[in-house]
Image (cartoon, rainbow, N blue to C red; front, side, top):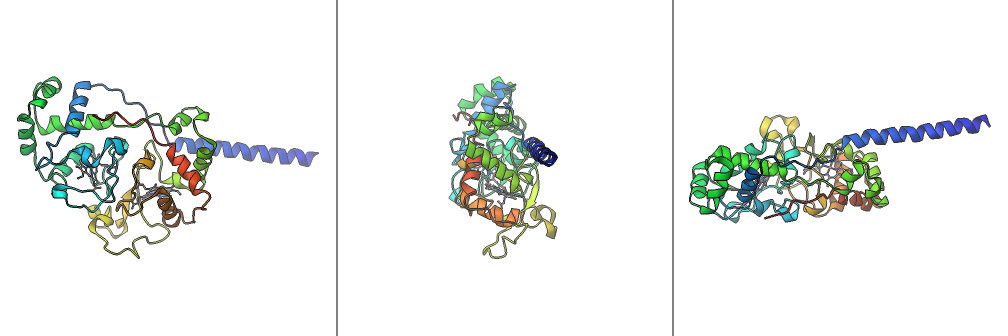
Length: 318
Ligand code: HEC
Ligand code: HEC
């Protein structure tokens, strides 16, 4: 009788420990808050700029050419196609929820979205332009006259352009995903499979890197912790070196900002070099290189069900 009692206590206390553990893990991921629009004129100007080609030297590209809102904020191809239709070295990360990242770009070299715009504008493989060019394009375009007047008393400058765009990007978040509703207390918003996938996401340790409100984007990690991913890779480029390009330190080679998993089912192909076509493939790679144990084949579809629950409300495009 006493034994049974003990067993019951051990059983319930381990259940309790599991519960506490879950509650703590729940705190590792935070729901995306609905952004209050405080400056609607600036945000709507930012949106107009996002869909315009004023940044592009030869007026061929807009932000939406690569960060397509309707495609989860990415372009659906392994590597971006930039200025003069040249193929770049990197996979385009999503612009959705980018404002939640601790830094920007795969190697984190941009601190803020304003830095991203400066970098993209001058990058010969992206916009290949400069501010004088952008300002004159805007001043010569009557469609921008009233929006700039309403937002900035007509001031067209690098400062107002960057501010309007970053305020729009602050609004490009995707709240209210089923998983966020789960985190906010609606336990029925996850299917049993997605919930099982969430438990696996925790037990395999994915959550140690993909965490915070963006489920990523808040720390740096090497790609290839348990095994050298780049050992067998041919054609290693500068873009593969990650943080090393900023610091020149050997230990920063192949270190990247952990990417966000929000809306991840919409943004194939994956990885900084676009080399993984499907989520199955990435999850297997994560097992080998980041987790140090193979992900069981029957667990993969459950993890994918969980990842599907991270798709939030995508802001209305144009
Ligand atoms: C030709 C394709 C292309 C265009 C056009 C483009 N981007 Fe990008 N964007 C990229 C690529 C590629 C990266 C990653 C670059 C890197 O990591 O070095 C990126 C990164 C970003 C990031 C950082 C995301 C992250 O998680 O690190 C933001 C934000 C962003 N772009 C916003 C914009 C905005 C705003 C515009 C328009 C002013 C724009 N982009 C135009 C291809 C493009
Ligand atoms: C030690 C840190 C770490 C762990 C643990 C980890 N990841 Fe990752 N994950 C990364 C890094 C870093 C990348 C980017 C690698 C690259 O692009 O070269 C990444 C990329 C991804 C991507 C592709 C994202 C994109 O936009 O291209 C997915 C999906 C992903 N991880 C899912 C998972 C899952 C599921 C698990 C658990 C089985 C997991 N990760 C465990 C660090 C980690």
